[in-house]
View (cartoon, rainbow, N blue to C red):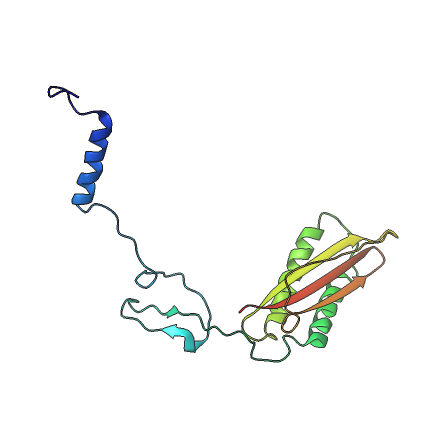
Length: 178
């Protein structure tokens, strides 16, 4: 590079970056303690609320490290079984199979079962509700599931219903979230 030559283009790029850093135009990152989240809808224990001078009036929740549920049994299985059987019977007692309605029926039944069972569970339990509906034509069906499971805390209930034209099976899983 001679004395009369201008700097190469990549050196101008380096100068541009350096001037931005020098003028402090780099955006600052917010930490977890000074952020302003207005969408915090976690319903955790009151003992886990961390009052901080950075929170600006918004409660932030810390981990409780609670590994065991409050109750010995996660859900009253007989009561849940009765609820599911009543919902399936009420919905499908006089219903004929129609494949175009199965998706809506499944979603509505899942929502209804979840609403009724959720009030029976202890805090920190998550519900998973699965409903299968099919036409009854003398065929067989096997429905299986597999998941990571803690046999000490997690539980499930399965109920089947059949009428002259369809079958329905609903399964409710209660999973403890640490």
